[in-house]
Structures are given as structure tokens and as C-alpha cells.
Image (tube, rainbow, N blue to C red; front, side, top):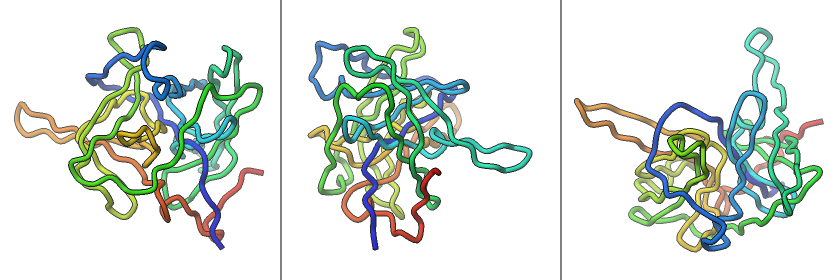
Length: 218
């Protein structure tokens, strides 16, 4: 039996810099649905999929005690509809992938995204949100080219917002969710540094979690 993973993921704030376009409330409504989040030890993102559920990265929703290896949930803050303060609580996760689901308490998300029906092709454009550090951590969004559409359920693209982008939506040109941003890879060849972004697909069968692997937070 399969259950559907229908929420949004987020990401920890990692050192780095990126060229992002600062977005404002005057831009298209899809960009105002982006949800930055903050916790005691991290700044990240979640990807809203309904008025009170979101998907994010597992490492955004949970942490591991380095002494006991105990998995502990993180509780995160966000700005909800009409400016109300909200709290995000982990609900469930997939132990095979860096994916988790969180539930909003105290406020609703200002908006949310629908899921795409198809995996993007190599050469297609995708969008990922992050923070612009040189502008006081302003919210921004970057556009990248899909390099590898599907490697064991992961999608790779030609860059990353890096700092604080974990858990953000990976959106196609129609602003539909194709995946959750979870990591980036950097390689240096002399003076050139190549950045490749990576995330987990949540399109079609890749949204499903077999009951055998489904983990709920009690």
C-alpha cells in the first residue's frame, strides 16, 4: 500500500554566496508563496502544498544528537497569512530520502503550490529559492538548467542558491512542484568552481512512500 507525500521541504542555512534575483510582493503571485523559516540553529525553507502542510528536507525538520544518535524534531517559525506568526511541527518522514512533511500550527500559509505531472527534461529551466546574504538575507529566487532529470529519484541542476535554500520547492516553468531542494555540490578546477544543485523528485510515483518506509512522529 502506498501513501502520498503531500507537503513541503526546507533547508539549513549553509555558508556560501549566490546570484539570486530579489523578489518583491509586486511580482507574480507564485513567488509570494515561498516560505522561509527560522529555528534556534538554522534558517531554511519549506515548500507549501496546502494551507497548513509543507514538504521540506529531513535535515531541516529533524536533528541528530551527536552523543546518543537520537533523532529529535525541530520546531520552526514562519510568517503566515496576514502576517500571523506560525509554528511548523514535523509530522512524517521518509528514511530513504532527505524528505519530511511538516504541519503548520497557529497560522496558515499565504499560498501553496500544486504538483507537476511530469519530470522536467534535461535543458528545461527550474527555480529554487534562497537568501541573498549581501542584501541582509533578503529572499531571492534563482533560475537554473536541468542537467540530469532523474538519478535514483534525484534531480540535478546547474547551480544553487546555497545558503538557506534547503527544503525549498524546485519549481518548473509553470510554477509547479517537481522536487525539494536538499543539497549542492562544488568542484574546483583551478580558478573555476562548478556548483551543481540537487534535490529529490516528488513527481508521479516519486511522491509515493510505501507503507513499509513511512515514519510518523508520535
